[in-house]
Structure formats: C-alpha cells, structure tokens
Amino acid sequence: MTDQQQTSKSIYDTREQWLKTAAGIVCQFYLADAGYAPRPDSYNISCGFARGRQRAPVAVTPREMSAGRRNEIFIAPTLNDSREVLVALTLGLVLAQRDCKPLPEGTRKMLGLPKIAKDGAVSGGSLKFHDMIDNLLTNALAGEPYPHQPLAPAKKCATRLLRMQCADSACGYNWRVTRKFADRTTMCPGCGHDKLMIGTRADDMEAFV
Ligand SMILES: [Zn+2]
Image (cartoon, rainbow, N blue to C red):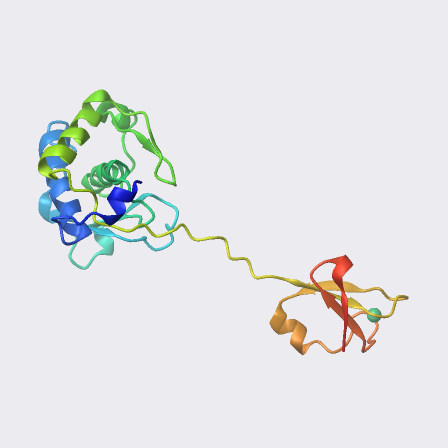
C-alpha cells in the first residue's frame, strides 16, 4: 500500500467497476485456456466480508445460496494493494468456476497461482501469472489503482474482565466478572460478606461496597 494509492482519484468510480474490468481480462486472457473461467453471468463481485469468513482475503458463496443462482465473490475490505486484490480476485474466479467445489490436486500449480495470506501478503506464483497481472495493471486498468480505502483489520475486542475479591481476608474468595455484573454484585458468593474489593489485577484492588 502506498500513499499515492490511497489519495489518487481513479477513473473507476467504484471498486466493483474496477474488479469487473479486471475479472473480464483475467478470465479471457488467463483462465479460459485452462478451462477455469466462470461464465460472465454466473458471478457477482463485491468488496466485503462473507458471513463468517472475516479473515479470508477472498470468499465465494455457492450458487445454491443465491436467489439469482450466482456465485458471490467477496474481496476482503482489508485488502488495498492492487496486486493483492487481483490475486484474491483470480482465486475467487477459479472457485466460482468450480462453484466452490474443492479444486483438483495440482490445480493451483497448473494455473501458476500464488498463495495469499490473511493479511494479503502474496507469495509464489508463476512468472506467466505475474506477467499477466503486470499487463492488466498497466493496460486494461490503465495504471489506475484499486479505488479503495482499506478497512483496518479489526482489533480483537475482548470484553474486559474485572477482578472481584471478598474483603474478608479469612475468606479471600476472588472471581472475574464483566463491569455490568460487577455493578449488580453486592456480596461475596463464597461467604456472603457484604464488603468487596474490585480491580483489574490482584495488586490494584480497591474497596467496593
Ligand atoms: Zn467471602
């Protein structure tokens, strides 16, 4: 990802236009020869997360899940680099052609497809594949980067737990609760004592009634 990519104005108004143009070229000039180009009317492409697949760079839903009997190809909104997006898109097209059935062994190698990690990092792939992508970026896409501002990957948002402890040192009962639960707790579940301590760690406990 570069600053230039994030600020330049694209001739493509939407990501979908850019993706659709790219998909047409990838199918026509790369996947068709190998028999892996999905029919143009058999898929839609969008930028978004597929349900339950938040961490995949690309996800494809089978035709039977769509009222229009189309495969939906979702490019993760965390991807921004044009080449990474095109690798994800190519994988999505191949999966759509198979209607999400597992790829026969050796297919990826036969097609020269790179690997793409959850964060979009691309590795491997044949020279032929990367030449095709270079050509696509320069010619069909006229050097226009993917018109997208990346969504930052979601941070793990664990509910913060508080530590509660019985203020009676003879009991010493301690447990962990959410803030909401802490507000409702008025006595020690161990001994029934009504003076409690609250904090985040054993060494920052404060009295709490
Ligand atoms: Zn107690």
